[in-house]
Length: 115
Length: 113
Image (cartoon, rainbow over the protein chains, first blue to last red):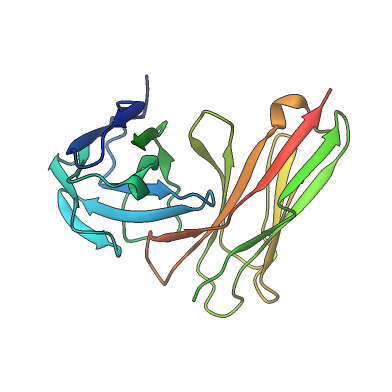
């Protein structure tokens, strides 16, 4: 059983297109995240949701919009894709947001390539 | 600016060697320190969450220590095996009672048979 799953695993698309990445967790966690692995291999947080409510929204272009239909799902929609959006995007979840101690469980990543 | 630094950037060792690497973080306002193991083509996986100065945690051949006063944590691997090859990341919460983690760039370990 996969704890945190993402689809698709690979996404190749043209500049200007709109695309979505889906994430699901079956751990019963309250909090879910989107991270971007940048060109220097840093993992940087983009968003976090707690029980469908947006909690963290880092300095991310408005073209990126997360949506959480329920606490087990957090999707990432990207409008008007740009070359610089090419990266690996990771979804993660944790038990609760109000703790520095909870480990985060990561999905397998989605490699987005914008041509 | 909150910096989490890891060294070395990469490490190559022979099977059976023991090895260690470092994570440095701001020593003021310590909250917790996370270690993750990230194998190529897989997801990062939590190893330890360390909270108290002097903490030592162990999982099989991997152990970690924490010094919050001087702002570092060591990860040790005893008798490295090829399956230990991975990138080891540490992460530091940005502020008190937050899950917003600042990750280091990791130490990439390669263990040769």
